[in-house]
Image 1: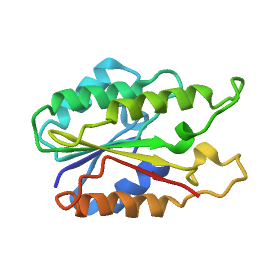
Image 2: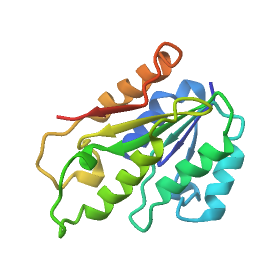
Image 3: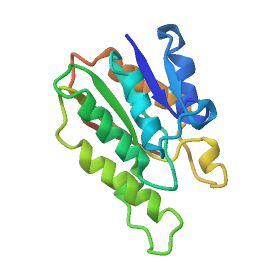
Image 4: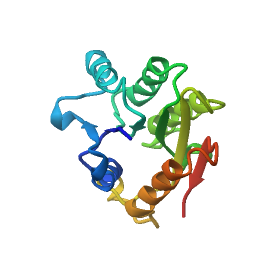
Length: 175
């Protein structure tokens, strides 16, 4: 199985990359020259992943909804193929935030991803993983109960191991 992961150098992406090391995953992040805000970088990612089996859409950018664009473009490139896209979304989409919340833009972006993922159960299948707060550098300033990145890895591993047994489209997990 060939696996690609965006945002593979920190947090959830790094944990997934390290876990799937036996599959020799390929990672894409700003640190190795792949900024998903750049159209040319997204096209290059797609070109390098054309013969892959699994694409984990994890990288998020505050400057635009590039994670959604990456998701849409990969889905289009893999049209009519038996492949799996795992989109890392957020449980924040299930809550009402005050208009002045600093997380408003993040919530809006994740809601747009969730909407795109609806009903995409084959060719390629999208599995949308809506996570509560995960113990990563991005949320280190919050004093809330947080999921461990290892738990996220277990969920993704379960989905991959049981891909043919279940058609899970969206899973919401949080504390």
